[in-house]
Image 1 (cartoon, rainbow, N blue to C red):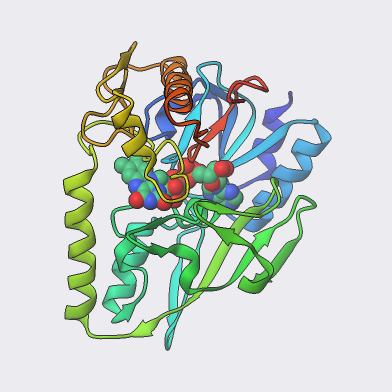
Image 2 (cartoon, rainbow, N blue to C red; image 1 turned 60 degrees about the vertical axis):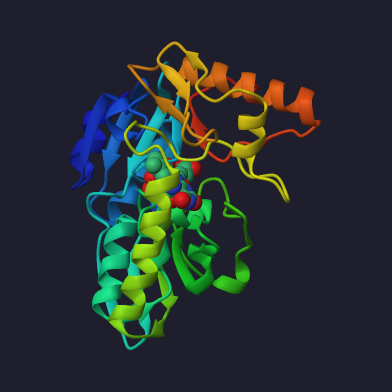
Length: 304
Ligand SMILES: Cc1cc2nc3c(=O)[nH]c(=O)nc-3n(C[C@H](O)[C@H](O)[C@H](O)COP(=O)(O)OP(=O)(O)OC[C@H]3O[C@@H](n4cnc5c(N)ncnc54)[C@H](O)[C@@H]3O)c2cc1C
């Protein structure tokens, strides 16, 4: 493929055969055909049309903190907005932020403006784009709760604005088309006092630190909670806490986390996912659905 041609066309950077282990919180993942960090919407449009010409798949990622990537890597372009799409601005109670901004920075900027709403999301790693796709949340609050609109790039390379009423959000999920690239989002927050917002933030932080295995690399909760019961409780009750396959382990602190204990391969994590699903299903007749997203695996790898 003539990647040099694309390199000349865009202002952003292109790294060929880039190990995706450098771009996931798991530290796992083989090489992508190209890892691209665009500088602008124009760059994105050029990448999309070049990829279409070359019949190459395009995947947009954020910080890779909810992502398991295959050891064989990704046969396509992986685009990350983390480097350049980072502007945050405020007008009265409104906050407009670009998709590559880290959620932790967004929360900090909102606190500076005495704006309440997003502060309990403080410890969630990753970018705003990833958080919107996942409808990330913690302690009863979700990123979509204060959202008013999103600007996105559709698969034809056209910028579209969607109001929150046109998007369906549910628990750790949204209904954006597969090829959507989220560019920015607008939130309507509440004016409050700094001390009240900081108190909410600190309480959430404390709860997170006492319940999550933050010493090891992970992608957060692997499975969604089924209705009325926590996935971690089912995994724990099935006796799987601490189970090790290769370098991956079911956390002994939070059973819904699979951690990279020592140079884990994606395949080690996949084996643990299969073991958890089979064991929990046998014991409870409950099929656990994945919360983490996956890239580069053969079709059917995660079928129940
Ligand atoms: C220690 C730890 C704790 C965590 N705790 C929580 C928690 O409390 N609550 C929670 O909800 N999550 C949690 N997570 C999971 C993760 O941090 C969130 O899902 C986060 O919002 C993902 O953001 P990201 O930028 O890393 O997305 P990525 O992992 O890079 O991508 C996630 C998905 O979004 C897509 N995507 C990313 N950016 C864009 C974009 N601009 N346009 C279109 N698609 C895009 C990707 O293709 C992928 O499908 C945790 C993870 C870790 C490692």
